[in-house]
Length: 456
Image 1 (spheres, rainbow, N blue to C red):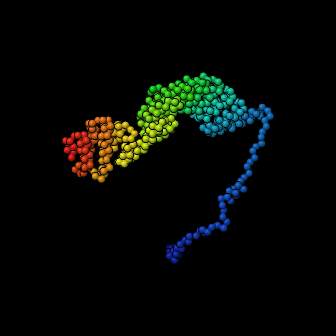
Image 2: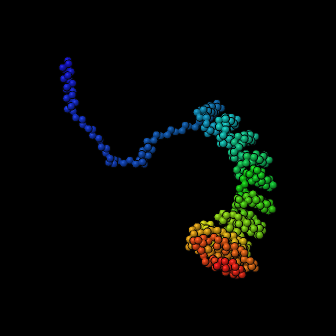
Image 3: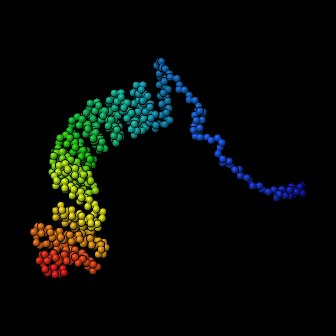
C-alpha cells in the first residue's frame, strides 16, 4: 500500500508539472450600433399600448330610504375616520371630513370635527379660515364671532384673520363692532396696510377726525413709541389733510416732518412734496425758500429729483433772474462733482471760481478760494506748482478789487493772502519771482514803501 501511494503522488506531480496555465481570453464586446435603433418616442408608445385598461368607476348608487342613507353615512364616516387615524397631522383630511358633514347639513358634527382638528394643529391658518367660513355661510353669526375672537387671540400676527373679522362686522352693519376690532388690531402695531385699512374704513363713514387721529398714531404712537415714521407716511398724512381742504393742517404736518428728520436724515422726496403743496396754494415765495433750503443741505448726488423739480418750477413761475439762478446752480453742481472727484484738478477750480465770482457774494467766493488753495500739490517740484500758484494770485487780486469796490484802503486781507502764499512756498527748493513782484507792486499801490522794499 505504501508503494502504491508513492506512485500516485509521483504521477500527480508529473501531471501538474506537465500542465501549462493558459491565460483567459477577454471577450471583446461588439461596439457597433444595433441594427434596430430604439427611440424614446417608441418606448413611450409601446408603454402606452401595453397600458392596462382602467377599471370603470363603480355605478352610482341611488338611496331610496333612510336605512340606506344611514348605511352610506356610516361607511363614509368610517372611511374618513380611518384616514385620520392613519395620519392625524394631514389637515386636508380633517377639512374634507368637515365639509362632507356640512354638505349633509350636519353642522354640529362639522363643528366637532373642526374642534378636534384644532386640538391637533391650532396654528394652521387654513383650518381657522374654513371653520369660520362655514359658520358665516350657515348664518351662524355669533359662532363666527367666537371663532374669529379665538383666532385673533391665538394667532394675533395673522393679518388675514383681522381683515376677515372686520369685513364681516362691517357687512353686518355693525360699524361700532368693526371699529372695536380695528382698535384691538392696532394695539399690536401691525404693518402699514392694516393702518390704511382702518383709515379707509373711517373715511367710508365720513369720520375725518377719527381718521386724523389714526394717522397720528400710525406715524407716532407716543413721543417714545415710533410706529411707521417713514417719509412716505408723512407725505400721505399731509395729502390726506390737503384732500379734505385742511391746508393749514397739511402745512403743519410737513413742518413737523421736516423738524422730525432734521438735517441729519433729510430726504428730497419730503421737500419736493412740501414744495408742490405750497405751489398748489400759490405760495411761490415759500416754494423757493423750501427748494433753496433743501438744495443747500442735501448732498448733491441725492438731490437730482429736487433740482429737476426746482428747475421746472422756475420755468413755470420764475422771472429771468430765477432761471439764471437755476442755471448757475446746475453748473455749480457740475463743478462740485469735478473737484470732488479730483481735488487737484486746478482747471476745474478756475472754472468754478469764475462762475462764483460772476454770481455769488463775497463770502461764498472766499469760501471756494479757501477750499481751492487748501489742495496743495503733494510733490515739491516747481512744474507741479505752476497752475496752483495762480489760485493764490487770483485770490489776492480778487481781495484787492473787492476792497477797492468797497472803498477800503487798508488792503489787509490782500496782504494776508500774499503773506500766506509766500510762507507756504518751499523757498529752499524753488520759489516764484512773480509772486514777490506782485506783492511788492501791491504794497507800492498801498503807498507802503518799507514793506515793498522788504519784499524785493
